Image (cartoon, rainbow, N blue to C red):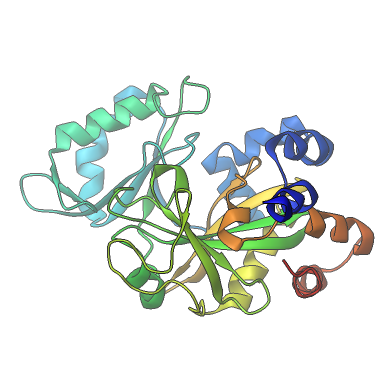
Amino acid sequence: MIRNLGFLAREVLGINRRNGEFMARHNPRHLFQTVDHKLKTKAALLAVGVPVAETLAVYRFQYETRRFAQDSRAWGEFVVKPAQGAGGEGVLVVTGYDGNGFLTVQGRGMPVRQLESHLSDILGGVFSLNQRYDEALVERCLHAHPLLAGLSFRGLPDIRVILYRGVPLMAMLRLATQQSKGRANLHAGGLGVGVDLTTGETVAAIAGKRWIHHHPDTDLPLLGVGIPQWSELLLTATRCADAVALGYLGVDLTLDVERGACVLELNARPGLAIQLANRQGLRPLLTAVDQKLVPGLPLHERMQLGQDIARLVVP
């Protein structure tokens, strides 16, 4: 017990310290408007050549939703998202059309009118961070690499990477469950699987407050899995620090079967459960960056620095 308390005091980053020492110092408030708005985020990422999901349509006014039925005929599979949503709220994945309505990733039918109503709710700010006016965007569906897709229950698995001053420090694979209804978000019931930053191999997994070894729905083992194209994924996450001038940043990306590494969104307030998924605290890693980072370090060297720190700071 004493050992555990000492570990918490020395190594785990808490929310107050995160907000006061890192976000307040390194994340200017005026830059939040970029990462809090998915369309602005995508524009910033595309400007530095970071791959993102293709945008099929944007709806900004209620009257524009009337054309949705016509627009959607050419899409097949697609994802509807609120531009200013958070935590996966309001995201709807459509896998096809059966003549009577759309089919969602959960396998249930949805009439066209119901989906139009969902768009209307998005524009009304039902899912936005400030509960005010929002925009709805439609993206082309991404399809995860078969190895990752097999680990998740229906939904798209993603990888969360924490960066500090442009250096990657910690990563976890997030997997959907039956409880999370296709969403990989941990607060919705998704799984967090810690990833060794140097090798891309999974090292620990958590469901809620329980460490686990197998997926609760598929019973597949979660530990010792090597994530394909790990260097590409980590380099892509590191490049995101060049797109937005935030010193403490969360990057969510996936490995698409056709396009490779593809960024889903950025987060100026990334959660702290990644520490539990890795059984390791962030504080020693953050301290090491402050001690070792040389200003102006190139992209590949920042990635290498993060991996070197991960090797040196053993949990």
